[in-house]
Image (cartoon, rainbow, N blue to C red; front, side, top):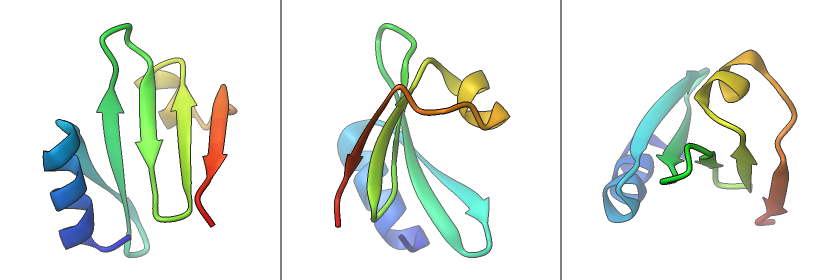
Length: 66
């Protein structure tokens, strides 16, 4: 996902655009229960929280988009 797409999607969902490096942009959306949803152009993942995501923990749920 490019920067512009990430920012548009993040704004629509009330999340944040996040640059993961190498030209890859993601959308991060924290749920009210503290869980984190991470969206790329290929997959949507759910993590227990930001710490787990940043630590490279396995996602608790995954939906492939392509």
